[in-house]
Amino acid sequence: MTTIDRVISSRRDVLRLAAAGLAGTALSGQAQSTWPTKPVTLIVPFPAGGGTDAFARPLAAQFARVTGKQLIIDNRGGAGGTLGASIAAKAQPDGYTLFMGGAHHAIAPSMYPKLDYDLEKDFVPLVLVANVPQVLVVNPKKITVDFKAFLTMLRQNPGKMNYGSAGSGSSHHLAGELFKQQTKTFITHIPYRGAGPALQDLIAGNIDMMFDGLGSSASHIKGGRIKALMVSGGKRNPAFPDVPCAAELGLPDYTVTTWYGIWAPKGTPADVQARAVEDIRKAGLTDEAKAVWANQGAEFGNLTPQQFGQFVSAEVKRWANVVKLSGAKLD
Image (tube, rainbow, N blue to C red):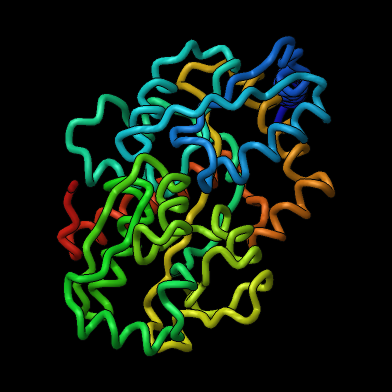
């Protein structure tokens, strides 16, 4: 290489380094966004009192603590959580309207053929807030037996018992359909406008059972208002060590989790996205939030926005297969 070539190469290296430095400065600037300068609305697409609320409201309290700004919960229930998602997808992409959905919304594309939004195209993933197992719960005054005896009851009385869900196409619904498929039972599905109303009817004895996320059932289980017969998956949950898991009850493939995450409408500025991720994670990792999550058998998600997006894509495919195999339809 000639001296001139070396000089040119050296200059190119300097230019590359300078460009890298400018890029780094730009990224650093993104992280220093002044967002939020006013209250932020978090659309929760289910009525108050459901599983999403069980994480959204404690998160909102901690968000206010770490940012000094309110995170206002706006419950917009209906259509299995898709109504609120549709509203959020059309919101101004300025960072002041965020959306908290979950497993229900990965199922929705397979259950609602005419959705007016696309979870993967109309939103940008920010944070996986929580991942909790589903649990089979009953009213203890109506059902006094253990899981195995209860399963015998179901098989001896096809169609005579029912289960409530947060709505057709929700994870509660699909958890029930998967359970029916794997246990060869027939249980009547009763959809509600959210897990909260379904839980209240279960507590009142108006329905027989629910396949619910621990997030909304935990306090009622501990208070004795409902009884947990089984937790999904291959291991017992640390928050409820006395509740047997599906695998030990003869259902090794019954693994259903309810997860919750936060998205922003597509078009939200990158610097605002970065600051939102930072502040939401700070809120979810406070000691107070960790205690709430642990009490509900959950952990705060440890995924980057990109990893969260990949997780959502995998869930959309997974639930499409479950819907196809179970034949689940909107009631």
